[in-house]
Length: 284
Length: 255
Image 1: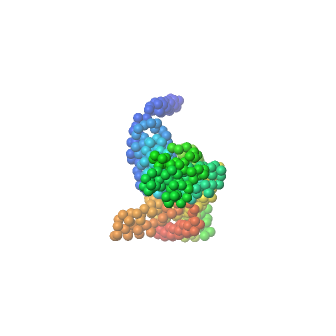
Image 2 (image 1 turned 90 degrees about the vertical axis):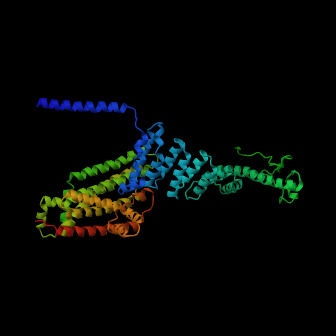
């Protein structure tokens, strides 16, 4: 009996040594597998939805949790992003198209890690189409379009769409106005900033809006005066000396002053208008 | 009805002695508690993951219990020959089926109640809203009632528990895939195939409509009218399945 017990104890000890020893060696080995290969057979979310048997949101949660661990755990391997759009754009959001976080996190990884802002915007576009009432995604897309892609046209459009969604932060209106300014549509930007100035409910917003209105008014006036100066040159064969001459020539209704009440001046050689007032905001 | 209640109480007492019940309950409670830790692994969506995991655990383990305990209800009585003793009393087979059903439903609802209590407690500890999850928990309880009736029907019909489990699981899966039938019909185009698919679509119990978990986690309201209608739909299926189970059992040769 004692021999049998000793035999069993020996076997248990041997098994423990085998398990613990091999485990320690295995854990010490670096991960050599192809990260992309792990994801190769991950099916589309629409098929997984059928396979989830009534638990699509739960399966979406589990894959989302797994994806976060996966993209946090592969260091700088080159192939780790091979199926990123598939996982976030098809698998998780195919299971639950209204799951907002995977669109946002997927876009974040695409921009910051993969440095692929176009794919990020495509993923966010997909999320916006599936969740038209959610302001966070167009807001985020506007930010990436502005900050990373430097595509002010698209950024302005994203912020315009965000503004129309109930619950969007008030700052979206300012961002939209700012993007319009950056893309060169100063007249619309001035209109928007004037509206923001009128509706401002705190000093910080009021001061910011007033500064933008001040500078944009000068920009808009100068652009208009430049056009009128060209017309004046056609009529009189010389550049105008001041806005009074434009009024006298019937090109302007009245003398135009800048927001600080100073007259605009014209370069006698080029005819380009300018203001003697300093801009309040830093010029790009 | 008194006889049915007597069978129900007996079934309840018998079911609560079943170890599989406690095993599934323990798994479910562990999973609900694990939701708290899963939430630590996510980026955003903590509230969603806790709520979704908890509700899914209650529904999944509830259905597993309904199928595994429900299917063996009548077959076990016949195999162990206890049914003969009970049916020797002045009791119709329909009353026996009804009593068995009520007993198991009582067990399942107590089980689901314990799981829901654990889940609600977890939400309360986290400070998450509790009220929005209540429609999902209620409709899960109604779905459990339908699945239990389904399991009992196959228990009365099938000659072995394994067959009963396979049939019930099959119908449970089909009941959750009913939403895909019109899509399939659309692919088939006009013809007898489409008609056959649509016929199955209307005949099968649409179990997926009891699942409002997606609406709950997305913060969509679940209208009271929908809950009432869905409850009526579930009750209708329970009555139909119990009648079918009683019919199947009354025709079964117990000699």
